[in-house]
Length: 378
Image (cartoon, rainbow, N blue to C red):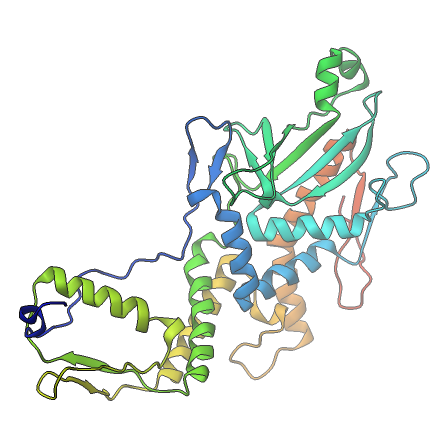
């Protein structure tokens, strides 16, 4: 507002545009012209968004890490790859199978899939298996070629290309041309929880908004403390009614600067040319925001647990009842183990069986409170 005519109008705040969820990255899949790979989400950053969400939404973090512990079980055993390896070693770096399984379990719970790099010898035998952070992988449309980079956010990046893993037999490997063998010495086994899209879908995809809400609630309370719990204000410009374009610009500036969870309770100061043109500020009487946010927190937590089909007590988050007996815990865990944990364990075991070309290579001793399982999953 730079001229006198504009200064003399009164601004009336109205809902010109609805709130837009600009912070949520959509899980779109789009192939850009000139690229061999398909973008994973808006700006090719969906897995980075999920990682940030899993780190900052406490309930989601608790469920993901807790479930990964359940999946990893009490003990993991695998047949040695080649002679000279110590039990449980997966590669020349000495990575242990227990740590590798937990890493891919975390990826499966966070992103809905996982990846392993399989290295063969000159004779075609599998000699090393490495965990690959699936966040750094992109794929062509049919998952036959993968592209690895740790800097997808940057315009100029170095990308390494890998073929999809194929379970060659001794005869089929010998039949390959030298150029084909060279290409397949290092390949990627890519496991995802769906067969209709290029990339996996996290099990909590329907609860992403709830996770984002929980993160915003924490930010709101943090900023409330930093801003001394000052209550919200209504600002009235008593100097005329501008055109809709001016209204829109003013609302945009105030929303960006003063509203939202990141600016909880901030005070707006106004400097005016004279008393007649002053801006009046009134503090409305509103219900207790603490109670409202407490109710909202309970709602979003329930949304997250519903997405996983899990009982909160399994992850150290008590429900409204007064107690949770060991019998109730065992009943809740038995159901969660049957519907979620065991299927993921079987998916992981199948992946290693496929790499080795035979069944029963990997065994996972199920999780128990005592630390000793009764049956093996293989």
